[in-house]
Length: 606
Image (cartoon, rainbow, N blue to C red; front, side, top):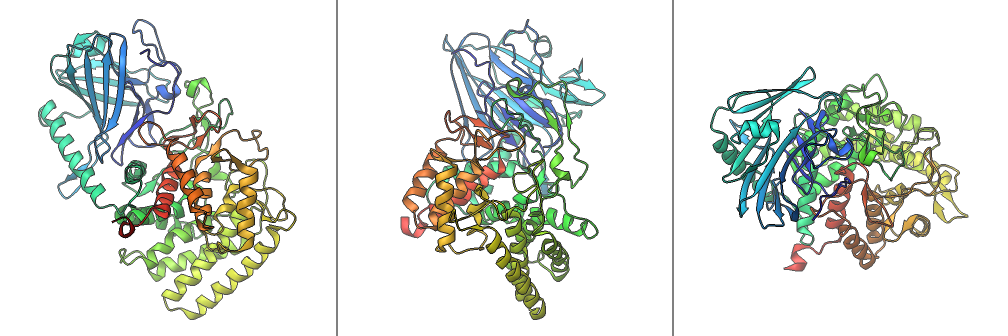
């Protein structure tokens, strides 16, 4: 088996709520932001051009490789059951084989979660006498800086003005630094993290951390509420969603990467290592379905902090994982991009856009706090008053042009989805006021919601097409209209919703996948299918009673996952290849939601 020079998204993900890393099928760490999810990618070869598999040939670096010297015969990769611990098996043509176990420690210690920014790799020979080469080539400052290397007694330090990494290992240091091949005759451990000394033995530390990390993930999965069918797919999606959670603040990033193109050579390269308010409702709903109340409560806390700070200004579409708002976009000049398809962007200009759906998105997410009795301290009158401020903003902007859910940069319009989300915010405020026993405010918000509903229904309906349309008084469709029933704007049996689903199926469906829209935008006509849109379509079909068709499409998209059960943002309808940032939170949320909706109940199954 020849190593594949071209990057793809058949990557494993490991992490602990602070740090995350992507590892390819050859046991090479190709992406890892340090020291947290949105940090400088010290391993950046995913975006740093082709990697040379001959150490004498220069390459751009940005990886941590454990390579068999001889030609490969087989590679296999799998997760240890119900965990974020990844195992890669490499076997050469002579029958020598190694297994590399990768994980980031996560477990309770001293009554708090221990989640250090530390990557641990354990190597063991499982067959023959493997001849091994280890290559550790971090980069700093988004690929611009090659570190200076210094050796200690059992560690290597990779230093630059941008930061320092320490690799502590029981492997021969000179072999690691000089990338000299050696026989793997006993287990080896590599612990990579901050410039701190270990307080115990290398192998013992790794073994103990691995055991406790596995115990943690097993207990976490045991507490999940999952459907009877598609359990493994849902568990993997749930773990992946958790790996996108920056636990310190509760934020959940849209993806772990930046600038994986949405389609080949499209220039649709964006940085997704931030938290979008639009995602809030859908993520909270998925966490609620899974019963992960701690993650849901922390995420609601993150949103509540944003609401508390927004009294004198408009909400932004996205925020940093520590609620930073200075996300100005710039280019990383040293990184050529995924398969050389630059640019590589840092930051996201969407934070400056007007996206009027954000007010409804936040209100819908926060509504859980007032109705979920498992969250006794979350919903309170002070929060309701802050949400009312957002409701007033929603009323003011519901019929005003914005960039819409697809963040169009140069084509403002009054988007139906944004207007409906503003209506939904008013509708949920009426429900919250009712549960808080505030009759005057209940009536006030119900009246406002009814007024918005009437105008949206009139201006977003196109009788010629027999469908709701993407913009007020428009004649085009987009996939966000599939959410009108999910958001309670129309009933599933409403002929207008049925007509909308059928029209979207005719115009946006490509095989078993769905485009988000079919018209040209700032970058031309979309080429790939937006994965979450297919899940929305499946959900809409189920709502219409077309469950057999919905189940078939769901099974089809499950088959589009990579070898480890993960999804990116986009799928090419013709090739089936994954494109877009990875792993995509939205895609994992869609999978969880559809599985819960379509599965037989436990009572029916048993």
